[in-house]
Image (cartoon, rainbow, N blue to C red; front, side):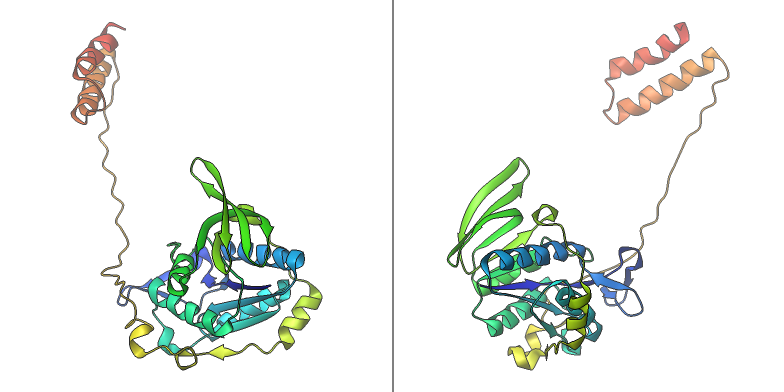
Length: 280
């Protein structure tokens, strides 16, 4: 069984910066890690390989240093890895990213199962996994919390929904996206790290994938960030001092009237508020 795991190298959450001119994320000069939610996908893929045999291939699209994420995936147990990297990919939105990854997956065919993390912590859209399935015309189960059965022809999975869980069966080849419940990620091993350092990881560009200039990067991205700005936080407060009972009654009436004006308190209750405080 051949299992493909698309992963993403993302900035540390507290190091995210945006280019206000282009509306894209600034990735240079910040620490980067494997998207935490992709680690659950990788671990599930490794467990399924241990159960059914075969191989696990990790792939990612990013700048040249994204190869570090692939080597970490190999150190954890992935058999092979592929990096999609070229300046022409810069600025790709979820549409262009899923298209490029789908083209790479076609090149890696035949395959049985694609496992993606639920979403990436930088974009937080959850669109790339389903996008890959759409480009490849594959069946999809999203928000998978566990796999109960896997054969060369089908997979049975438990899907997390708002009301609880759904048990679904899907023909293979297909794609699933997973949540944290799917599997707790293992740590890289020393032997795995040694193998990762020696492994020759191929780097594919747009020409290797057959992508034209209108299918990649900013040009191939229909999504546009019109404006990025830091919102100004403004707080307005009105302080009422109530040194005696009469002032407390007036303060209660004022607060009740404010709540009533916003339909948070019935008008009748507002009129009684000050009287009750005054009598108390």
